Image (cartoon, rainbow, N blue to C red; front, top):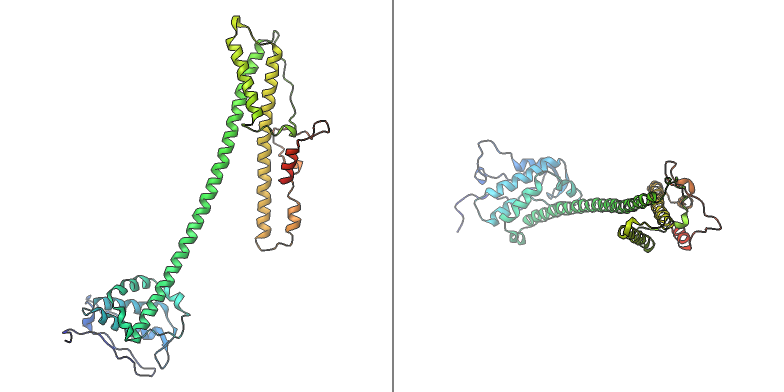
Length: 348
């Protein structure tokens, strides 16, 4: 039985010729808004260039073309017929393209993606089996939607990559800060115990404590790292000495020589930690400068001078800041550097 309402249709093929026009949808095909709706057929014809077979050769005005497509989709959504009738109406646009050169620009038009997405559920795709015009519309719609989905996917991947880089940099910064805090805490602990030993030593001196002699830091002792067995053993000896003093009867104190020995050992260990921290900071600054130079050289893919640049990446004595409180004494034949330190320096 034929439907009792008007369905906008169009002939399968339009008459050939430059003045050929697509049929217009009747006023009953879409709800009235109180104003004259734009002529979507006329907009579509003015926005494209077709050949005699009504194949679209080029898009003349992208915004006008997108406006016409969106208008067709809105009219189709308001047709009271079946989903097949809506599909046939959209097929009257005859969106057959000679190529897809303009599809990337078409997909960027505002509102087109949302309009096509909302239109697909209200039409019957099976009509394309018997209509090349409907098949052309579905091909155009699927291509535009896929292009936009791919663009959104690439954008999300880029944003996720940027977020991962930010998180990695933040984690690296927090780790470095945590390492510095731990080292500073251990140095504070050494300084505190050194103060206690100095106080006990001053009590054993009848005429006051002489000014301690400044000790020079040798690189050969820079392997006294926080948490090492040597440092832990030293701190254990200090604790034992302090307990002996506290448990002694009649206010008896340890001999001056023993206290002086512990005092000098703790003082040396504290200075070694300061030396290690200062050297680590200076090497970090050197590495940062070298990395910046490498990035600047390798940025424009100019790697001809990379060998010359790498030859300059060596730790020199001049790298230590003049403001540093640490005095570095070169190793002498009597106090050679341990093989482990030489191996680590060569690796760096």
